[in-house]
Image (cartoon, rainbow, N blue to C red):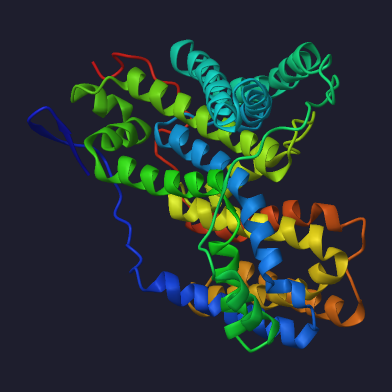
Length: 420
């Protein structure tokens, strides 16, 4: 990896990774739709890939994705950000306060500012004072709960429709869509044609009734990829996460770039909290994040610290969230068939291609047990249903851990002048 500072060309450490060809992504999407079509036909569960489920999945995935994207910014600069949950909590309050006093777009600004303040506190503790990154993040999560609770009671308790634990109804952000396309796509979806109906449902979910904040969030993913991987600024940020000592010797102000990255991380996580308050709901509520900051962190790890991977991981967790909310235990029961097929495929691939016999055998055995459970039961117990997204998180991370590589200096305390 080369690093440009002024007119000089500098070298920062890197590790070669194979690029995935662009054509693989639409092919993978088509394969997913084929599998969902098969499961719909076998199980008779139409909600598996309906436009309503996919729209809800996108809505529930976006706050996770924004939190994961925030974590990516911080960790690419070498700062572990366990405090994403706390930054999201601050963002939910900031969105409500801004929206009530200045309209929906001021709510977006409020979420960004409050999340950024949380990021600034985390940067001050970790970068300037050298506090352990995990300790700082956990402390921020704890403090954010109390701060948001106090601010809600102070500013929302006396308002009509508000209370100490929630805000009045918030103004809505505008929706975006392609006119005239929803009805034809809905007609095709209702035909229950193999693959074609699933494709129509996906297109309908992606082109009708999208919140402006959803579109903004997707653009932020594209912008993050371009800034961090296509600009000298992004190269400097990533060099701070790989080898800050080497970056310093080449003239990079490591403290400055770490601060920028962590504050940006907080702003993005705060925007994810704002999404929960203004789009997923229409009010601020205490405890609204529900641990989604941690799931966003898991999505970032699953995505191997890459924007595209973060988006895919968030989509998976958001899909599970939407499915359990819309279809309950019966829909999740149908999805067990997909989980079983994935486990069997992963296990066989690990045994035949990677000679990882222990992991492969374990995956195959678990896959067979899931198939047996699917045949012997009619639905997932209601006690388990609310935890389906979290169980999915653990399962995905367990099988993804072998191919992950975090930035080399991630979580390490850096002090200026160490390389001299």
